[in-house]
Length: 373
Image (cartoon, rainbow, N blue to C red):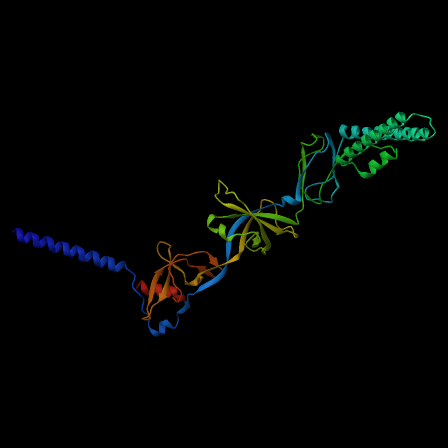
């Protein structure tokens, strides 16, 4: 009885082992054999090491070129009396943007007038003492003091004039003051420091401005903008200053050419990405600040690797890439590969293929169908 039980147990073990082996064999992919007629519809590609220029596809955000844009601060204090520009207006350097009823302006004009009178009077007295000195009409000490007073007064007048210049006073107004002409109304002027487009208006009529503190306008030259492209760690080694870039604002938009100008040395703590600054010619005004764009960077540094056409790559049930490789006996073996980045109409394959392998590039779906039968 005991012997019979042992025999039954051994038989059961053998049976379960055989079933397990059969199940493992059934899940192992087998090579696909095709007839000569079927093979005529299959196209192969011979894998070889190729040199290529990598492209990095990412996204970016448009920003002003900070080298060609500026925030215009109020140079004088006082209430805004009149605005003369609106957002979107193009201005030249020195054009008025707004007028201000400013006591600072009136004080600066008055100070310059007084300084001019004092300087003229002191110079006239110094010249008179110099003439008297030649005829022994005054002592040398008095003539020297008169010259010192004249020089000091002229320095004060120059400083007062520079105050008007720093307040962006119109040159004609300064000339009128110097020639003693009356000024109809003493108004301060906020002028554009650069040529460009008014992109922001931050003040309104009647608003009280504080000199050197209140931001009034933003003026930017929009003929050139920055695109801040986001670069992942894995792509960072392929991005360099000078790389050419295609920037696209929409699916149907024509790409705009740019160039990598700077690669940041810091990682964004929120996105874990590195910003690459791209300078883009925006002469047509198609790019606007804060616009999201697609960015394709063409690396200038060539790389070498195994490339296969996009059509050769298939996906399994777990969405993992594989290819069919032609075997010496004419069959096709399914081989898992690692998919790298895209280069034109090909993908880089870091691992899974060797030089000389022939992969199916046309008819792979049919081979997969035959394997699943």
